[in-house]
Amino acid sequence: MINLTIGEKVWQSVVYVILIFLSLLCLLPFLYVIAVSVTPESEVLRRGIVIIPESFTFLAYKEVFISHGIWQAYKITLFRTIVGTVLNVLFTVLAAYPLSKKYLPGRSPFLLFIVFTMMFSGGLIPTYLLIRSLGLLNSPWVLIIPNLISAFNLVIIKGFFEQLPGEIEESARVDGASELQSLWRIILPLSLPVISTISLFYAVGHWNSYFDAIVYINDSNLMPLQVVLRNILLNVATQSAESLANSGAVSTFAVQMATVVVTTIPILIVYPFLQKHFTKGVLLGSVKG
Amino acid sequence: MQVKLAADAIPLSKKRKSWIRTIQKYKVMYALLLPALIYFAVFKYIPMAGILIAFKNYNLALGVWDSPWVGFKNFTDFMNGVYFWDIMKNTIVISLYKLLFGFSAPILLALLLNEVHTQWFKKIVQTITYLPHFLSWVIVYGLMVALLAPGDGLFNMILKESGFQPISFLTEPAWGRLLVIASEIWKDIGWGAILYLAALAGIDPSLYEAARMDGASKWRQLWHITLPGIRGVIILMLILKLSHILDAGFDQIFMFANTFNQEKIDIIDTWVYREGLERLKIGLATAVGLFKAVIGFGLVLAANKLAKKFDGQIW
Image 1: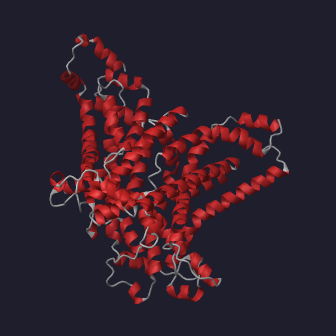
Image 2: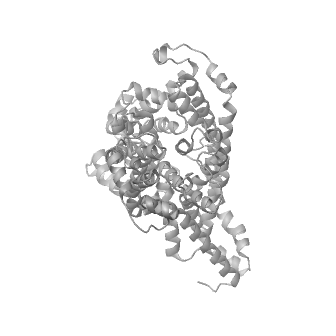
């Protein structure tokens, strides 16, 4: 760049040091968790703090997968994330399309009807009573249906549709395309960036949420990953009758850390591919709908 | 737009189009909208009607309609309850701390990143600092356990090896709020910075050139160019956050709270969950939820009004 004065060079170095420090602060907890999860109990007892293990063991992982029902939880979470996200996006797009048409009679009242729910809600207890009377308790669908459409995402997609040049759609109409055809053939392909962003938001939301499962589900076979992790972290009794931890081969702490790793890894794998979309998403979200 | 104009030009221009005709004309559009309207009606508006419970002595066996009315008794019970000031204070104090520190931290990070001209370095830092945002609060709590657990946590091992007493960070009330706020900053600092980075990128570089020519120092440039350049975004974000002052972060607190540190970090939402669904004081908990929803609603309206004065409205 341009010639820097000494003061500016010092300033630059300070900035770099702070940023490297911050990045390490974000990364180190993960590395420590991984280290603990693969370190044999004997080495911990001998050495104390283990940052870089000398020997490895996957006993803690074995314990997590065998005694804590992680596979079942993975299945539920995958079901929730995949089916949930597909339905979320489908219904959000279908509703956003008519609402993006300024000529549609009744558009404003419908929009108000939806946006109002962003500002005011019945709260936890009335919602719980509704879900109960709908017979959704202890059904895997309770994780999907009550969150079918996010008003916020709907407004973002609607805003994006409105910005698309109207002429393309008009010419399709003149050529005889129906509303559905022009949505499918013209609007959707043009909206892929916003739709992928919204899909990611929905998917991350599904993957990470745990509270609805705690409230609405009792059946331990229907518990998603986050709830199982929570139970293990809080030492709530889980299905660990023949647990290795009881036999002293592996510490509870290592098992907890192994569960953290197992739950985090899918996000870490997907993250690099999706990161560029995320940035776009925040900026989209900040644009008023 | 032209679709409409064309349609209007056809003989339909008779002023008295009945609404049945309108529906017929736009039937596909309305059909697409219908599932969403049903969804919002059922899952958002029916619970709003369920707020009636706040004014009743709700009895599971009798149901919403047949439970006896009690007027505002649930509300007065709440306001006079011993826990009222505690949970109100916790909610507001935690929110304000998050506002103060959680709000300024991403701005600082964005300002620092803005000073970096090595693109690959900037990108790596950004990639790493965004990451925690995508972890659930359960995972973040897991990382906290790794660092802070009383026996095996990293800090406590270090404390023990240096001859100090271990501290049970996760259950000690004195550490509760610090933990909640620090973990929130850790999780969302990078994510929050994105918006400010975009705003910073929008500042005209020639302003800096001119300032350098005039011999303005780094601090003067920051004060007279950078900060004014992102002032709009900062104010808007601040107003938005103010409208959520009663949402101290349910998912997080629910994860971090335990019987030991509850006195310091129990917030309205976690209290409603416990009293309503665990202790089945349904009427009382609904009243508290309504209390919070009404105040929140007022705050959102006020925030939108304020925001209009600055950088356009929120919706």
